Image (tube, rainbow, N blue to C red; front, side, top):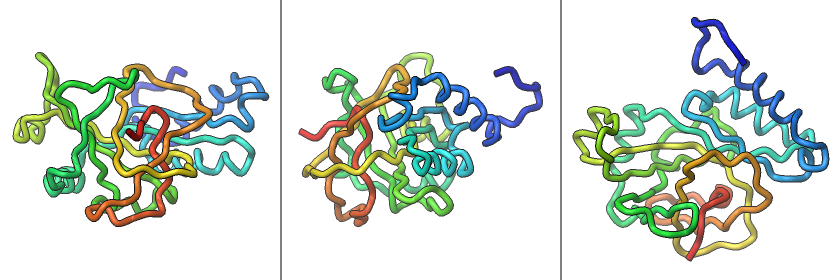
Amino acid sequence: MLRPGNAGANTAADHIAVLEQALAQIPDAHRHGTGILIRTDSAGSAKAFLTHLRSLRSHGIHTFFSVGCPVTEPVRRAIRALPKHVWHPALEQDGSLRTGAEVAELTGLVDLDGYPDGTRIIVRRERPHPGAQLSLFDLDEGMRHQVFLTDPPTAKAHCSTWKSATARTPASRTASAAARPPASAAFPRDTSPSTPPGWSCP
């Protein structure tokens, strides 16, 4: 959808319009009753857009999101405050370990007021590849950081530890999700939903 050059990157109305067009292309048999994972970069992290995604559930469209999140100063402070034991090895889509990459949860350490209930915030860090664009924070920490917001569906089971898969290409739809772990001492919440599709519990 072409937009004027002065269009705002985080305009929720534009994201909603594109989303509605995308959902309209999914056959009714799959648009209703099948879990649909919506993925965007950090421009799609606007609260109004994510609130709209959640509201679609009342219309029988089971949408969930996994969207990029800007690495703001509160997020940087939360990352620096993480103890070493909460970082876990990241996985590739095929379940193999991603060399030099780790994930951790920031839920409870970053203010998510105004986001849909059950929203979680996850950070991945990895050694930067040659030519990677790094922020001053990344240069200071020596790792490249990517943060995203997600609200995966609730699972019936729990597991003791968790890892995150790192998707190389966007996934548009999923019908199931892996279980989320119980909350740790660092993240005492136990009311959030399970880990998103593509995650695994050993």
